Image (cartoon, rainbow, N blue to C red):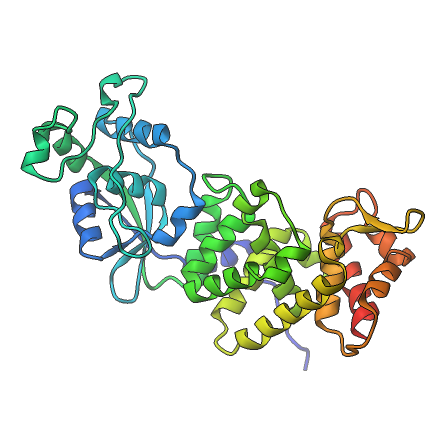
Length: 374
């Protein structure tokens, strides 16, 4: 009897399947109503995200100007939780600006933040120095926003897109990533950090603890700019991911940022993931490296000058840090082994000029394991 050929799914089938993964609703709601939901803890704007967004006071004031002038505002994307409350997927900066202006914005500790003192804008110069009063007494101050202006803001309506709770978590994270990539967030890691917080805030805090490790910092000194862009967390992410997936395929790495985000999200969701054990390995690895080469660890070794020179190299970090974390022989001379790496023709070829991360990583990770972990 002839076997039936299994046909690959058609494009139409794939579209229908994926469309069903994200279920949404849409309607308008006044800012006054949203403020009430926020005060009742029924709207979570993820205060932990505030460290990643960079709107200046003038940008915030320009947004308030837009509300007052009736300029259309892009949709706010919210996700419905199993308890029926909402959390912000996209629009945190806009809602934070509104709530800070109204004097109700809270920080991650639940404390009220300082009210926004508005700046003069292109069309509303008189907005400069104005603020939202919180009592009748304050309303008498000449710089207090009038009741009429307050009502204009509270009655302004925002278009809401609600990602319903039937949607899989992965769909929510993918939506957040797509909406925020290339927006207010400057780097892939900042988007990744937000996705991690949405997945499991305790995992993100654990990553931060690792990134603050004294010996790790000795080995990877980075500039203030890179610090602000969360590069230290990017390195921790690479370490954790490449320890768990030490042999990624080249095809998986064409979009390295997505690969790292997908994999670190999997670790954050994995209840069986041994954070204590992996944390101990991380600290041991950088303790051993800091003891021998400190901030030279991930620089190129110059055999002619007999010293490490140049800047931090991510290719060296991937090979050395992950390789050392997997090593079994503790008596090996680490400094000697690191220098040997810079004699390895295969390694030098794999990090040559013009080599992409997708081509490099499948080569450098096995080289590091072979050299340090054997």
